[in-house]
Amino acid sequence: MSIKMKMFSLLAAIGGVALLAGLAIFYFLNAAKDDASVTNALGRQRMLTQAMGKSALSYASQKNLVGDTQSYISELNRYVTQMRKKYVKFVLKPAKKTSLSISMNPAGETSPAVPFPATFTRSVNEGFSKTASISIDIVSEAPINPKQGLHGEIDKRANVFLHKNPTEIYFEPKKTKTGLVLAFYTADTAVAKGCAACHTRMENVTYKQGDLLGIRRFEMPFSADIAVGEKALNPSLKEYKSAVSIFEQTLKAAKSGGEYPANLTMSTSKYMDAIDSDLAQAKIKEIEAAFSAMRISVARIFIPKA
Image 1 (cartoon, one colour):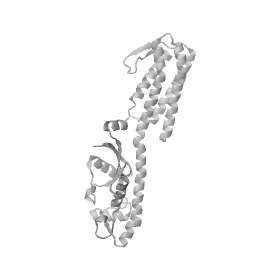
Image 2 (cartoon, one colour):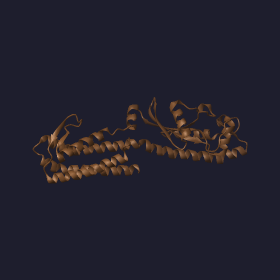
Image 3 (cartoon, one colour):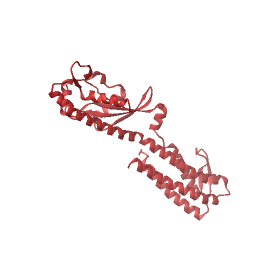
Image 4 (tube, helix red, strand yellow):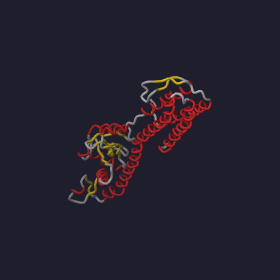
């Protein structure tokens, strides 16, 4: 289900509860007008539906931050792969036939030379990074270019992961001097037999087309404040769960009589008699059905299974 459909489904579910709660308040308050504490508790129900909606929607938006960004990275990664394939086919192969040199630093050669695919990709990425809020690099545990080794523990963890799962994307937030950065990694594979043969010859390790040659690192600045950034990446449903609990207990007390939370921290409770009104009781049943549907919707769409 797309994030738009998820949001629409949740909005519809919460909206149903909020509407019914709002309409029912009139009947509740009229039936309990002689008890101020009960009146306040029943009037609080509509506010609680707003709290549930705010918390669940905020959680949904924050929870999809990484997923949406990863989708963008996936598309960008496919573009890089296609660019490398075309470069090998239309530049590198003709260059070899004309005995043109292939270099890690073609600008520094005394005779005309073309860059290696990774060198070319890196050069394009460096130019792209100057005008975009994302940097792209290719690193390896045993690079042909010694400057392109793995840097730090996150690179190492990504390298291990992608050796085992070359078709997936590895993600990990990264703390830097400038704030929190989102780091995504993908496999950099031999896109053609020529790439595999070249790396085999230069590294003295046998490679074949499709083998992992290194990893691509995509980094995007996320938050200048690391604490704020980490909180956004790890949203909580605490407010939602608290509002659900208070709403549910208060609704049960209004229906059948019993204890209900007297405050939002649920540190104290009070007793309420069942509301003696057929119309109010009918509205309570409607709210219960909408409330149950909303909780099922939230649990199915947003709350991970334990």
